[in-house]
Image 1 (cartoon, protein in one colour):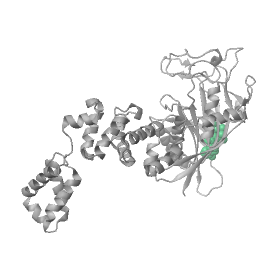
Image 2 (cartoon, protein in one colour):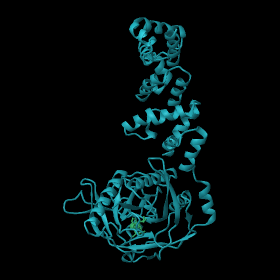
Image 3 (cartoon, protein in one colour):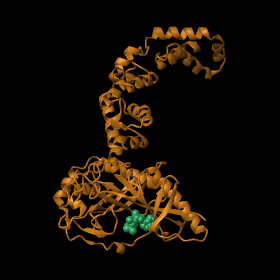
Image 4 (spheres, helix red, strand yellow):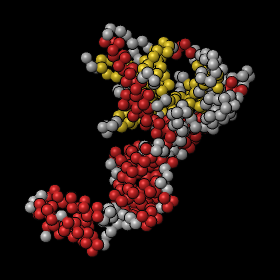
Length: 480
Ligand code: ADP
Ligand code: MG
């Protein structure tokens, strides 16, 4: 009997505002505990929340970017529950009327197929504080710096059918919120995290199965592993005669398993009601128009443009537009080198990406600037160096030699390509004279030996002979 997996994600993106959603306290990460929580965040008697317009602007930006409707009128509600890191006893969120509803996100899978995932809603809410269990023996510390930090909770339709699809969706969202500059995307610091709702059903079944919600996953790898574990658990449970119960589960990365935290609370357990301290949120047409005008080029549009403007394949265009910074870097290389885009793409996606990866660096931290890489690529295009020698030049640039200047490195190391026909002819003659046996075999029909001769000439030239000329001359002489 085969099973179908059904997944819906609730992603929490921390909005990159400087102050909190309902107070003027700072949102900066990493401050000493409880130094960034004001009377509003603490919920002291008599204080009133005031909505941060910047948070609304960011939510609207997101809504427009996913083709959703941005509600002209939405409502903040109190979600009541007790937890030590929630001093007010309720979280201000949106319930029945969210600010953003009914959008879509296009995801691309590894095999190149695309799929549209529905985004049910995105609503504004405040974050809670943090409980610190490690620092105090026998006690729990409470840090309220995070209380009141603006979050955009983005709820998907149960449209994903595998952990891979869930990851593709999450990555796409992650890229989008950073393009929009509404979230820094820092997953280690918790700025972008997700709850995964997972259920299974028999293939062909009309109804969805009962779901479990796995809370607070803060890395793509954990999301994938947690979902896969959960799917296995549910299938085994049902196949052995059991029933999945709707509950909240926790993923334990060390043991790679999910464990039950609590049975799922129903919405009515939270006793949601409109927050009497806040007026309904009204988003006026003018405001929305202004937000729309400020939208940057979106990832899908950029990818399409890279394909048409630069003649890149869909794959290359996807890789290069995965982040706005990478896309900008690539475009700067193309523009300042004035070389073929594909050649530039190969260097950015190849040698540069490999070294960034190896050193765990972001493109913005690259020791080789786009201008420097462009200069080096120009030297390949104008035949000063071969593509092979360029790898050595690139490594020297990475190491900061000659301040990353390709010409300086080529000059100092004597890496200039030999294009003088007479000089190359001399090397070709030497190689032919030194290998009479191979010459005879080649002339006797062993065509494959041609590569051997090319290799030999390149070797005696220390990689500096122009490969095209070496090929031509060898052909001429050997076939003579
Ligand atoms: P709640 O508010 O209780 O978390 P929602 O109905 O808003 O519940 O759904 C939360 C998430 O769970 C959504 O992302 C939705 O797509 C997903 N979901 C709903 N039903 C299922 C199901 N049977 N299997 C997997 N995911 C589901
Ligand atoms: Mg939920």
